[in-house]
Image (cartoon, rainbow, N blue to C red; front, side, top):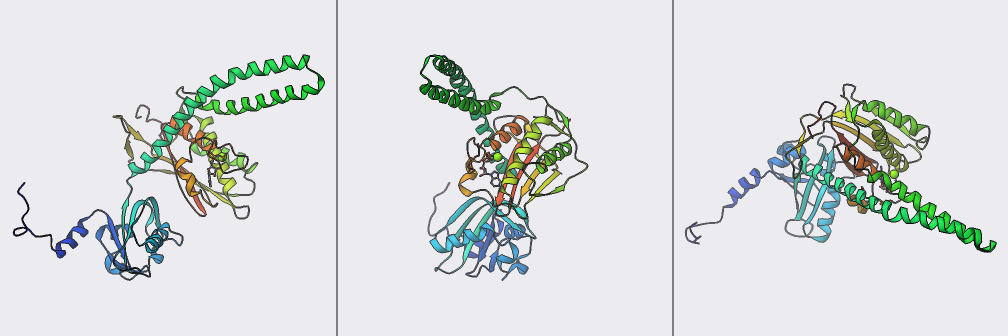
Length: 370
Ligand SMILES: Nc1ncnc2c1ncn2[C@@H]1O[C@H](COP(=O)(O)OP(=O)(O)O)[C@@H](O)[C@H]1O
Ligand SMILES: [Mg+2]
């Protein structure tokens, strides 16, 4: 490479800088102090699903849903007068649908001036990649559960036996204490038992399963029990091929998701939407493997509750993560484990009045594809 010389070489002129911005595969949107669009590059036109000439001067509030996190990002930029970035931001509007992007927002010039937004849609692989880490979470749970079962449960039997022996010889006043030992031992044992489902590392027994039948069963169980107060809305793709799965375990998965949805839904006007769809042509490379994941069947459980607290999201599928007074925090850990055992992935999006869990599963007849 020949060295740069100030005499021979120039910086790229500004007119060409515009060409560079136009060529970027990143959506660039400039808004003024009132959030009206001042400029947008072709990738931005594509994201907003409109031509630049139409977008010019349009208020962002007309393009995005009212509670869009994009407004929060812009606000944070205005307040701090410095760049703010967010990964996994949901951009949603009547015309643009529902996208997940990584976004950066920076002030241009004086405080109170324009703001430039740079957004890049997360590739599906990146979204799924994020979710595949939940599988590792489930794996570490199984290791821990196996350890608990072995190291804790066995000694517990000994402790209980000893307490029962003592009971026969101690003074009646002390019997209360031996009784206490037994009761506490039983409580710990129940806890460990609950973890035991995670230790099962055997491949699951899978057959073609009609997922609508699974959902129907879950809905019935829910409506006659914990979800009496909510309205169910079903939107099923009747031509959906069977899932390659284990019926009982799938019932467990959707029961856990519907239970959380029912617990999150408001008491008045609570709604749970169950939906199935077929996703065409999705093949995902699995890290560290030559194989491809084919997960065309999508089942979603959506509720209109308050949404998932921000600080919970990173660890939502980890065991013992709960915000409920009597929660175990094992529901979603089990969902992640079972879906993972099916070779599927589970993903979620959450905002106020709209929390959706999406389970992607392999189709029957795709044996060996994984
Ligand atoms: N649909 C939902 N809406 C809002 N928060 C949810 C939803 N599903 C799960 N969560 C949050 O995730 C936590 C963990 O859920 P889970 O693993 O099922 O355990 P648990 O239900 O016992 O708390 C819940 O305590 C709740 O805070
Ligand atoms: Mg739960």
